[in-house]
Image (cartoon, rainbow, N blue to C red; front, top):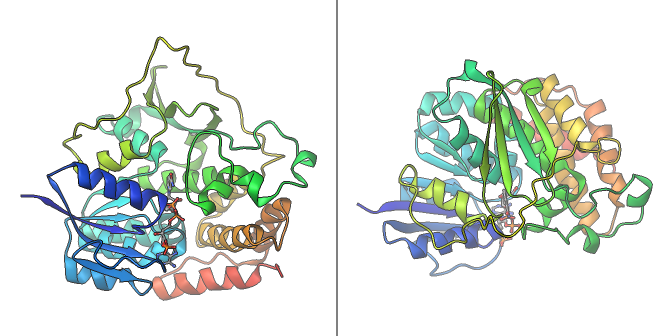
Length: 350
Ligand SMILES: NC(=O)c1ccc[n+]([C@@H]2O[C@H](COP(=O)([O-])OP(=O)(O)OC[C@H]3O[C@@H](n4cnc5c(N)ncnc54)[C@H](OP(=O)(O)O)[C@@H]3O)[C@@H](O)[C@H]2O)c1
């Protein structure tokens, strides 16, 4: 039986790579595809542009939902899959971060698989698979540091969207590329890891690792550390999630240990890139603070990409919103949508 896949956000960076993985594997079948606004007629038996992705999911009844929508817009599809116990291959980290406890509750009720597609979380998922939680001392998420690694805050004052879109190791959509430049992406990943692996924030670290070869490290209580390595290529975690647990063969490049691989690690500069610390703080405060962090960041990044605010205004906008929301937990999706909208409305950008 072929595994029936729905790809949401099929025209994006992850979506297109997912289509490539499906195309190359005869055991995978594309049954539905969606985009935000790009026409995709004929791409899959069922398609939808804009609109509510859950309509297509209801019709298609896929075995796996690959959620590669960008931003909070992906939250309905995430909750749809989790609630029904349909396997969710999750690239859309914003939905898990924003929905937080609501998503975890839906996941518990649905009892299905939640397979992260983010490379660091895919790595952590694999490393943690056969280890009991009491043996785990902590999780280390790696970060390339983005195009502005090593710069002081003063040196970030005049960077442009074009500068921020030049990522050194990954080719990705514009929003996550800017998030990588501000380290908001690693902040979102910290929150994502907390909800995925049920680890407290003080047991999740971030290390800057410029070559993006090590994707995650698990520290064990006996002093050993396990690492997951590979060249940065999103088709690896996509294939892992779509073929789980088969780990299908891919034609992708194997690590070459004769080529002088460098495995450097540094602490992140939280003064130059405060969004990572703000994400941690939002996570520790709980409730809808992570939702507000995400919402404010989405609005500010869009404004930066459109040239309406400067790079350093992004973290200032998020800090300002976090200081003004009440962060009360959302009891249902309507309250979550309200918390998201409220945070967006508080972002003071032209
Ligand atoms: N790219 C990576 O390497 C990477 C790595 C790890 C995690 N992720 C995560 O994966 C997700 C997708 O990232 P990406 O880089 O693939 O983004 P992207 O290239 O910008 O693609 C986003 C996709 O979402 C669709 N979309 C945008 N707004 C939408 C809306 N309101 N409703 C429904 N669909 C909408 C877009 O459709 P249109 O084409 O019509 O705009 C496009 O298909 C993000 O959450 C990101 O953080 C990405």
